[in-house]
Every structure is written in C-alpha cells, then in structure tokens.
Length: 105
Length: 123
Image (tube, rainbow over all chains, first blue to last red):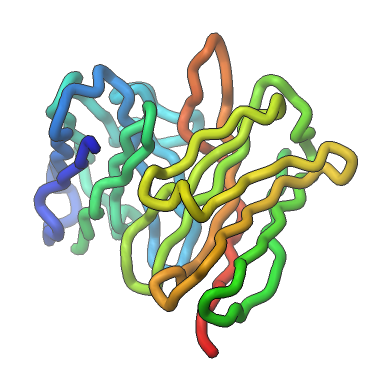
C-alpha cells in the first residue's frame, strides 16, 4: 500500500507569512493528489486537486505543486481564517489521506 | 446546489453492523457525472477514506476495510448507503458522505460533503 506522509505535523506562523506543507508518497502517484482544509469543528473543504488545480472559490493565496512522490501546499500570505488542519489525499486506486498538518497563528 | 445529509443510528453495539444513509438533494445519484463517497474521522484524529460507488454500481473500497464494507445506491430514493459489519470501538467516528465529480474515466476528489454524523460503538 502507498503511504502518504505529511510534514510538519504542526506549525505556528505569523499573519502574512509564507507557509509550506509537504506531502510525500511512498511510491509515485503522478499528479493524483488533493489538498483539504478542515477548520475546527467543520467539514473538510477541498482546496486543490490534480496536485495544482485550485478548486473554484478558493483564495489564490493557496497553491499546490509537485508530481510523482513529492508535493507541496503553499499559503503565500497566511491569514487568521487559515487556522486549520490540512490534509493531502492520494486520489487513485486505494485513496489515502495524510495524517494532517495543524496550522496555528 | 447539492446537499448531502447523513442519517442512521448514533449508537451501535460491538460486533453488530453499522448502517448509514446519505440523502442527496439538488442532484441525482443516477447522474453519470458524479460518484458517491463515504469518509470517516475518529474523534480528534485524521480522515480515513472508506470507499465510493458510481451510479453503475462500480465500487472501490479501502483495502483495510474491504472485508467489512458495502456501499450501495438506491436511485428510487436518491440515496446511497454504507454498511460496516462486525464493528468495534475503533469504528467510532464521524461519518461523512461526499460527492465527487467523474469525467473521462477520472474520479476527481469530492468537493461536496455532508455535515457528518457521529457513530459511537459501545455496549
């Protein structure tokens, strides 16, 4: 089974900072990678699919990149409303989530 | 705008079968443009994909749960369902149903989710 490993597991940054979260697949998955945001007590929200395509309505400060085994989610300028846990998800064959990265301010 | 609503017992006894239904409004489970997911989240933990079904009946299950999971669709009621057998306390979680877009043989990750329902496994 392909495992998805996110790093870091948590981070603290200041408003306006550039934040990068990494997701690594144990085997190549092409660009079958999505990112979700889950705010405390809320339903997960799809941010990015196909590794780098922004879901409609998602602010442009969010971006995704990568292919194969290494992927990143970047928040170009962290905002207070971005406090959340972020999950990557492998989206082919047996779908698998990463363990999550908690972002705090 | 599509809405998804999970329903079912909030308490299930160990060794019994967990059964949940997702009612879809504002969209059709018979549509060839979408497929239907179940995802769960144990309290305080991360997300776990359970499986999905396409309107044709084609399914894909998490290998770690496959022996216990059945997902089905009821087009007459515009619903899809989850059955998870032989449950234990480890199956205690918030269960979400979700809709994903299907196009050109590609299952795009689900962008529409229900609010989730907590199922506790306890005697």
